[in-house]
Amino acid sequence: YTMFLVFCQCIINAMFAKGVLLVTDSPPDKTPAYLPFICGITYVGAMLASNASLKWVNYPTQVLGKSCKPIPVMILGVLLAGKRYNIIKYLSVMLIVIGVALFMYKDGKSDSSGFSLGSGEMLLLTSLTLDGLTGVCQEKMRGYGMKAHYMMLMMNLSALVVMSMSLLATGEIWEALTFCSKHPEIVPEIITSVVPVPLVKTSSTSWCRSSGP
Image 1: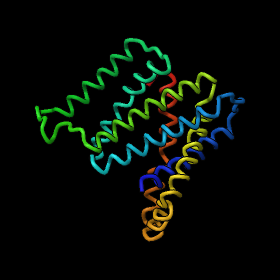
Image 2: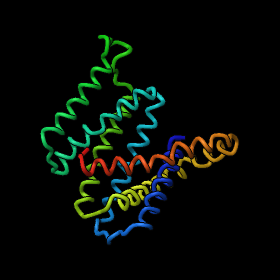
Image 3: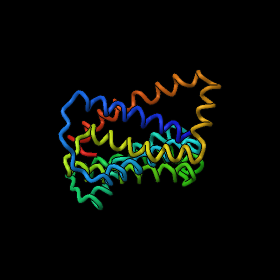
């Protein structure tokens, strides 16, 4: 139930962002409404593709793939958002590429233990591309002065709109709720997997604002 899990994640993220905004000053925002909506779509699409990839690749491979996120963020940031980075940022990304290549082809094994472009890898590439597009949208929203937690709230609310329609259209929402009612022991697992995420996102967002992608 990939969509249901992402839906729960977006709810927690939105609640966290709203809670932060309630206790902090949030100046008026003049960002065009279409930007958070597009960003929400690419954001939730990246999460769905990443989670779905686990049907074909193991978790360490998924984590390794997602560790390459700065690469599409930087490339698409330069091409679509007009960003410029110093040489240190480019060298950092190059080191990531080298590290991933060394890990994938360690011990000279390039057969079944090496990289092969299957369904899982294609989903990871899709997720990374959508991460890059999300970064472009976020950069444009920052250009309008949108603050981090307001951005987080609007992105997740937009994602919830899309996810709600998808869950209702596919009927997955009812299947997932039925599954949870039959296996209530899974509910604490869902909660513990989604609650820490907004805290991590807040920390990583603060770091990215000072260090780039």
